[in-house]
Picture (spheres, rainbow, N blue to C red):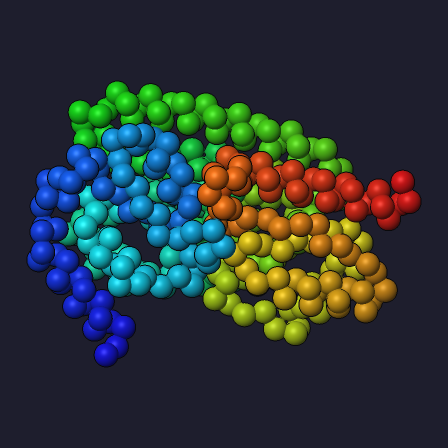
Length: 316
C-alpha cells in the first residue's frame, strides 16, 4: 500500500471518529489541543498559551524539518487537533501534502504568515521561494509569536487576557534576547564575522547581526553537497583564513568534517568550533531545549569559537 493511500485511510478514519467538532477534540482535558511541527514553534505556543493549551510537538531534538515525513501517529494527532501551527515557507517540505489536506477541516496556521514579504529573504538558488529560517532573526520571531497570540485569542476569546499577558512577557524577553545577540556579535571584529555551517540556515542571522554566512548545502538539506561544493568552500576558508567552522545538530557532521580535511590539504588548519542548533532545539530540560536558550547557545558558541581559535593560532 502506498504512503498516500495509508495517509488517506488514516485521515478519513480520524475525521469520522469523533474529531469533527471542536468541542469533541478538547473535551477530555478542557484545554485547546494544539499540534506543532518544530520545537521553536512548540516553545512559543507553550509560552503564549500557558495552561489553557495542551501542545504536542511532532519534531524533537536533532530532527530535520526539511526531510521529516509524517507518521500515521502524527496524522492521527493532527486530525484530532483544534489548531495546527507550522512554520510555512516550505520548511516542512515533506509534510506539505498532509498540511494541505488538514487545512480547511482544522485550523492550520503558518506562524510566518504575519511577516511582511519585504522582510523575507528570497535567495536566487531557492527556486523563487523564501528562506524559511526566520527564527534566527529574533525580531522576526517576535512576529511569529504575535501570530500565535492572535490565533489563540480568535479561537478562545475567554482566554484573551492570559494570552495577551503571556505574549507581552514573551515579547519583552525576546527583545532582551535580540539585544544580547547583537551585543555579543560585536565582540567579534567585523572582518572575522564569518559563519560557515553545514547548510544555509543562518542567512537571517547574518543579515541582522552582521555576519557573512556560508553554508555547504543549500537552504534545504534536501540539496546534497557534492565534491565541488566541498572544494569551493575549503578554498574560501583557506583564502580567508577562517579560524572555525560549525556542525549542526540536525545535519550529519560528515560533510563539515570533509570540508575541514579539504582545508587541511590546502595547508591551513581550521577547527570545528562546536555544534549549533539550526532546524531543531536541543534536549528538553536543558537550556538549549528552549528557543531563548538555543539562541543564546548559538551566539555564545560562535563568538567563543571565532575569538578562541584566533587566539590559539596567534599563540596567545
